[in-house]
Structures are given as C-alpha cells and as structure tokens.
Image 1 (cartoon, rainbow over the protein chains, first blue to last red):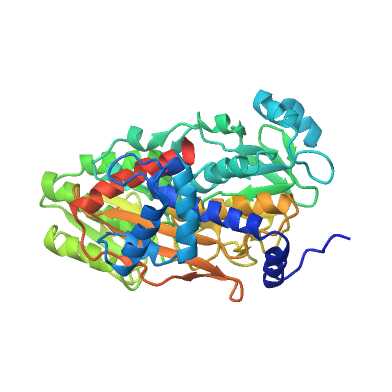
Image 2: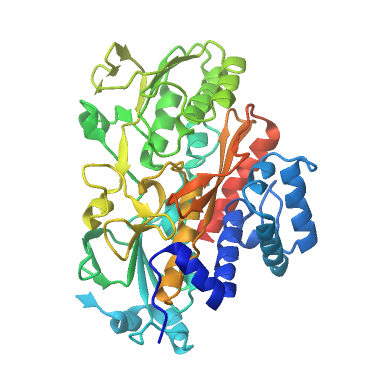
Length: 101
Length: 420
C-alpha cells in the first residue's frame, strides 16, 4: 500500500530520507545551483565581468566558496552569498557546475 | 472552447507532440500534465523555462500580452541617458525552443474550480497547475488628479518599463537648465526598493553635466531612504552636492497636470518634470484568480511551493507575493525556480524540496561609472514557514567602477537567463 503524503514537511523529509533521499537532494541541488545562474549566466556561462562557473573543477569551487566565506579570498558580494550555504551545499553545487560544459 | 489535455496535444505544436511520443512519465490519468504560466516577465518566463527543463514531460503554455520584454532593471539608465530603449528591450523568440507554447493574449477570466483560464482572444485552456506572475499594479486612484494628469502626459511613474520610460527621458531632455525634476516615492512595500534612489542618482548624474543649475526634489512617503542608504548618501553628498532636496515623510497626495504641481500634507510644489510613483499592489490577475489576500494588496503563498494560501493548484511568484523579501526581478527569477521545482515534484507525486533557498543580488548605479550592491541569501525555515535572512547579507557603503562592471554583466546574464 503506498505511503500517504505526510502533511508536515518534517515528516515528509524523514520519509524522503528513508525512501528517496537521492531524489530530494537532486532537486535541492538543481534548484540552488540555478540560483547562481541569475548572475553567472544560463548554464553558468557569463557575459562580461562576472566570471563563468560552468565546468569549474569541483575542489576549486568548494575551496573558493570556503575562502569567500572565511574572507581568505577577497570578494565583493561572494562572501555574502557563500555565507548563506552549507559546506554540503558547496560540495553538491561544485559537482553540478563541474558537470556543465 | 475548452481544451482538455489531449486537445492541447493536438494544437501544441510539433515540439511538444514529438516530446509526447518520447513516452515520458505521465500523470495518473495517463496524459501529460499541463501547466499554464501567465506573465512572461522575470518570474514567469524563468518558471516556464525551468518547468520544461526539469519536467520534460510537462506541457507548458506561457501567456503574455506584450510583444517584447522590456526590463525594469537598467531602465533608470535609459532615464539617465546612459542607455537606449533598445538596450532594455528583448524578444521572446527563444522561449519556444524550450518547448514552451507562447500565446500572445491577455487572460480575462480564471475559473479555479474548473481549472481553466480564458483569454481575450476567446481561448479557454485547462490546467493542472497555474502559475501567475503579473508583477505590480499601480494604484493611481490613491493620488488625486493622477489619472487625468497621466493621460495628458504631464505625470509619469515609469515604474513599469516601457512608453513612460521613454517619455520621462524626453521630458528631462526638454527641461531647461535651472528646472526642477520632482520624484514622489511610494510607501513600502513597492517594486524595487532601491529603484527610486538609483533613479535620483542617475538623473542627478545627467543634470549635473547637462543642466547644472537644475534641482531635484524628492518627496518620499517613507521616513528615510528605504534601501542602500549609505551608498546613495555617499553619492548624493560627494557627486551631486546641493542638487538634491530630500524630504522624508512627504507622501504626494495630489498632482495637477495643468499647474504642474505635486501636493503633500504640507506644501504644493511646482516642477518642470513630475515623476510621481503611486503605491502599488499585486497585479489584477491575482484578484481574478482569487489569490489576493482579503482586504489587502498582496498574495500569501506557501513559500516551499509558492502555491496560494487561498486557492489550490494556483501558484503566485514575483512582485505580487506577500513577503518580507525584496520585490525585485532577481528575486522573481528565484521564486520561479523554487516554484518550478516544486511543481515538477508535485505533478510526479513526490514531496517538494522542504528547505528551498533563494538569493537576491541587486546592483544600483550611482553615476555613469559607479555602482553598488546589496546581496542576501534566504533559507526557508519550515517551522517559521518563512524565509530567514542568512548571516553576512548586506549592502556596500560606496559605489565603484568594479561594481559598475558587475552591474552591466549582471544585466546581460539575467536577461539571457530569463530569455535565451
């Protein structure tokens, strides 16, 4: 018998963790990665001064985000953005952008 | 004529039909789900694109009455003489390549019980999910004399980029040196919080070079500069000293196009160019769909899906949404992605992402060579049922050339993101 849709998101999230976490993580990764593209261009390909992020090496991406957050790497807005995401999200976004050509 | 899903397939063009033959997942009824998106601005066009990208089995119809997309971001640059209307005007030609069915028409009725929308052209389309992204409606009737003065071309808001943007530029060009440009700023919430202050800066940039004896009078309904105050104050005091007369808590209550005056509770002020921006509310489509909050101006949604709090299967994105988040084109694109992702999951019978994240990046020019920014990340908190501002968000206190270059690049990229 199919599991009924849980009315509470917390219960739903637990259910996903048991039955299909990969799918949930996938949509979350796609969604947050797409958020980057409003500035960095469709598919992560930029026109003009903002750098492209399509095809970046994953480790480079993750280190850049960590360094923006800590301030080890100087930035204009990227410290503000990097501080809003978790390290697990850096990893997921890094893998996603590395996969784009 | 009411179209069901199968009828939709018959008329929806070769692209969608070919995709249907590909045998993607279907809904319980065995047909491909149909999502209708109304409004092809930053939010609606982005949502339609991502619905097709993430849900290739979904038929998407995008209904828009205008021939072209005219961008509000960078429209202040046109008013300041730094860009032309052509630079902010873009076609919709690329959207059908994503399998989106574009319909140039205006929605005149929405039946949320039968789940249909009807257009002025006479078509009725059924939907499984409806996304409405109508932007804002200007409440011109809240300012006495506004409608008459506006139809006579004596007052403009230029708060929807288009003919009024071009008209305001012409008025500034025709204004004599020593003239007065008057801008009235509505109370919050309104579209683009820093927009009025960017406009003041760029008009000042133009006048200080072309007509340096001129004055700018700012009648702000708000008690203080609403957004990026240090950035704008720095520009106004260092670049345009003595030109800008800023008057907080001075709502414009009436305009007179014959006398060319704007009146507040305190004064009647004469100007050569009257740029009064009325208060605003969610677009009229929201009222048609019954998703506007009762006795209020905006639309409450479930922020994990952007589905209306009042009407099932209807989603609202962009400026029309009731929230504490800034009303910006950039935010609308990110509402659109959360909404599209949620609809794809819901139509597939899965749980949407329970913790979506959206971000805002907003550049404002302070001159024809300098800009500053505000940037924030907002993470949904399921317990609070709202987006929570993450640490370290904020604005730069001073404009510079590097951020001007990023501002230009941002515009090209977001336009491409929405329309390419």
